Every structure is written in structure tokens, then in C-alpha cells.
Image (cartoon, rainbow, N blue to C red; front, side):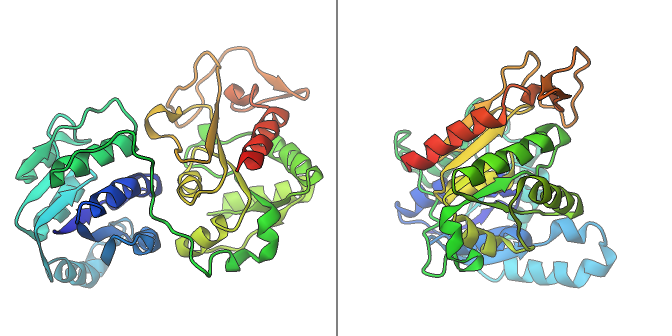
Length: 347
């Protein structure tokens, strides 16, 4: 069977779909994939994916008139092939509209009560019932199984399909084999582990014989990476695309990060990954994989699921200074590094 998958973003959502893609391929399904252009390299790495159709909606929506040519080209690419089934694994109106533009014998997605936006289900010919209160990876696997008509084994180990290439690791040299990658950036201010704690963690990692690698994705993250490097030690990495990131991740020995797309990608690449959770929780969208561990705050208002910290109670201190967000005060560098070191030793 030849299918078209519509799963455009975000980075974490794209990673969550990979085990379902692997499972479906074992039942004879081959895929083309519509995905945001920034994540094209992830889709290209999966062995079940033939053609990748990049969409640039995040860029186009900022200048719709000037993007008409690219949008027309995308629509032409979308309609160039006919599929046995078109699967919208996003569950949004915008992704359902993309699926509706494709040529397929059947359009399938989440059932109306289970889609992220219920209106999306009106554009499907068949909806798959997938209960909400479970991890996103499990929901994706159940959606694919229902769409393609096979039984999903809940006990089947996760296989993200990001096999290591011979070139993996070239982007960060052989030193990466003894490196610890600090994923200090996050999309919400409330997810950010205090900078002073990253500095102390860098000192502890280097004392244990690790080189600390500090990535960044925007100007603010680059400044923070430089401050951590200057005060705690480490090497600030150059800007790179997602394909280069996969190579770097597959070359490092250990990763410590907050709740972010890159942490999900690290887990998918099989890197020993410790993910820190304060305002969010790992239950429904947390990092998963064979070499993944999580540390969650037990602060009274955690997880608040708020982009910014709204706590107004007594402050929480770490090393005689306020911890911000306060829910991270109990996730001290000593505790984090001890757990990370044990995770790396078990790998």
C-alpha cells in the first residue's frame, strides 16, 4: 500500500510519529510525507519514506501574497501522485485541508472527539477513535494501526527508524564520543532550567571527564550558551540544520535537556537522554526511548502547563539565590548530574 502522511510540525510531534511509521512499514505500507521544511531531514532519514513534500506554512503565512508561487508549486507536488490512503496524523484544520488537496482513494484521521480540532474530522472519509489520555506516541501508533487495519502490539519496543549513518558524528569530530550535550533552550520561559544551575552542571560534567557542548537556536539562546561556556566551561556549537543535528546527536555520549523538540530528537536517536520537567509533565508528551530518563519537580503547583511562571508564594532558594522558576529548586545540579552519569554508565 502507498500512503501519504500529513504530519507537519512541531519537532516533537514529528518525532512522535516515527515509531508508528516504522510499525506500519512492517505491515507493507510505504509513505510519502508532507512535513514542515525545517524537519524535512527527519522524514528523509526514515527507511519507510520515499518522497518528502516540504511545506513552508510557517514562513508563507508571514507573506501570503509573495509566497503564491511556492504555494502553487507545493500544491502541484502534492497532486503529482495518487495514493491508496491519505492520513492526517496532526488532527488540525490546516493539516486536514492539506490532506483534502491530495489525491487519495481514502482520507483518514482522528475521530471527531479525538482530534485536536474537532472540525478537522469533517474533511475525513473515515475517523479512527484514539483516546486522548495517553502518550502522544501511543496515540500515533493506534491511529496508524486503525487507519491501515492491523493490530497494534502495545508491548512492541519503540523503533524511531533513525538508523545511524556512516557519516554520523562527522559534524562534531571524534571528541563528541566523550561529550555531553546541554539542551538548555525551550519554547516556554517556564521550561527553562536556571542558568546558574547549567553553569554548575557544566563544571560537574567537565570534572567527570566530559566535554560540554552548548547548542543554540536563536540569539537569546546563543547568548545564554556563551555565558554558560564562559562561567562554567564548554564549547558553543555553530548553527546547523536538522540533518546535521541528527549527526551530532548520534555522536555524543550523553544529553541533558529541558522539555524541548531537540530532547525528543535525542531520545529518538538512541542517545542516553535525561529530560527535566518543571512546568510540564512527561506523561502525555514526554521524551521516550530505551535510553531515556526523566526528572520531574514535585513543587505544589507543578506541572502548571503555563508558558510563564505564575507562582506568587514564598521564594525557593538554591545556593543562596532565588531559583527561577521556583519549581526547579529541587532539581539541583548535583541531583541532575548524578542521574545523568548513571544513565550514561548504563548505556
